[in-house]
Length: 208
Image (tube, rainbow, N blue to C red):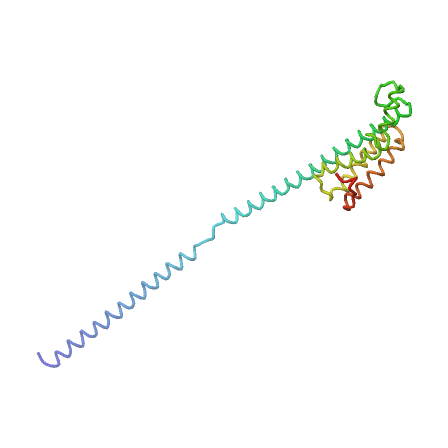
């Protein structure tokens, strides 16, 4: 074989190798592009799940409903406490007024009793300063009831004082006229003891 023939073969082989290399590079680049495209497509179709948002909204709604229920329960409880104190005060003032009537020899408006000497004597003891229906003990009992209903929370003093005033007004209405002076004195004593409780200025003799 001549030298020219050998050179021609070498040139042909080199050209074929170059063409193969270029083809391989193109295929590699195409595969890379396709792979990159596939990755991008996959990323592009990813969507954040809405379950998380729905769950958060549901939790918020539940929390809001729970708070509303708690607030309503607290309001109902406060109203129940006030109604209890109103009734206690009504009965206390009526009882005190009735006892005062007996001490004066007057028949009670709420009891069908004969006012004899013994009844009058007992009634006078009961409305004395140290008696069960006296100003001190009656006002102490009312304050003690208020404290018990509030759980000893002095921040509820004003609220419960208003309930006391409503109870006193009811007792007055049931009496038909102004309550006896002993009831008015008890009213003043209760207001003073409520103020002392609220302000933390109660003396040992008035603390529960």
